[in-house]
Length: 424
Picture 1: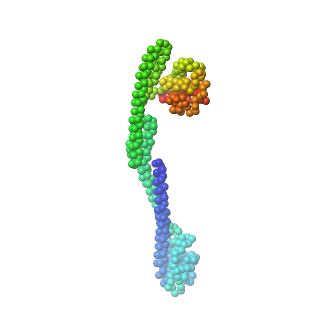
Picture 2 (picture 1 turned 135 degrees about the horizontal axis):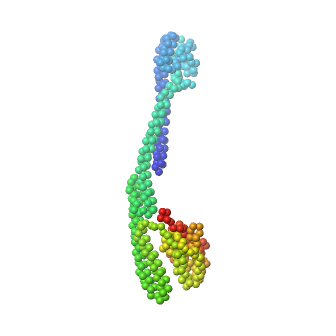
Picture 3 (picture 1 turned 60 degrees about the horizontal axis):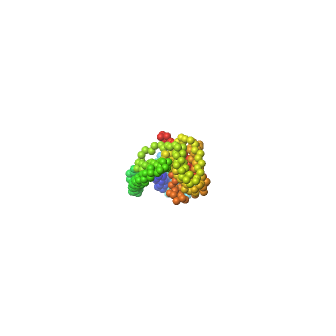
């Protein structure tokens, strides 16, 4: 923007200077030509009394003296054809002046001033003074250079003023852009100092108000999430008490472990909501151990619903760059979708393998598959929240991988290795 403003001012300045300096330059040349012509005419007029009354010898002496003083070729054409002074042929202007008409005309060498002298007894004499081209343009080149230099100076001054004015506009805009980028990077305490024209100051005030409003809304949202998560502790406590009252120790241990896992997830959610600005450490977890644990958990439900489970799990450890809680939620989402989108008795397979520097978790079933676009957040055909596959997708992205849906009945979760603190 700064360069464009300077270019605009330069263009306007150049056009303005051309509109004024070109006519002025032509006027300077015309004035120089007229000045040289007037001097030559005055010199010729000074010879009129001599040519009209003196003899040829006196006229010759006077003409030679004038030519030496003026530096111009001076010729006098007498009625008898005698040419005194510079020996030049009779031009059409001289022939016309011999009839009694004085004039100024153009010649190949410049300009000629011819004056008819009447009153001689033998007829009309003619005085001719040639004005060379260099005398007609004397001082014109220097004047044009001065005008050109003046034009350049004015353009530079205009550019300097335009640059100063542009800086007063560009600097506040740059500050607005910098603060906008900081806000986009979650630096919600970033504020811009209003400066520049009133319009930019109004925009700066609106941006500061927006940042403050976003900060307030985020604080309220985090508090609501924290409160909601904290409210879940009561039913979790009741669930744990119910599990302890079961007669089957295995069922009690399984339900208690599930309640403990859910409580850990709730605690992590509270911490994430309340301490969002805490330093983030590089996440890492063992996908082999988590997948084995979650498959064992869901196998109980699979057995109850008559589903055959085929396992192909590479032994661990298999570290990946995602937190254990997030990876657990992602695996539960993938396995839970099998039960949500397929009828009872539908077999499914879980495969965990290392491929090309990443770990691939594949969950495939023999059901009808999920509808197109199921990965998009909030899309669900089974009456659920539609967040399961999106949770898995974000977990994969956190580990530098991706989530793939092949044919609707096969989901691939690709996970990258954990990052070092230096890379993070």
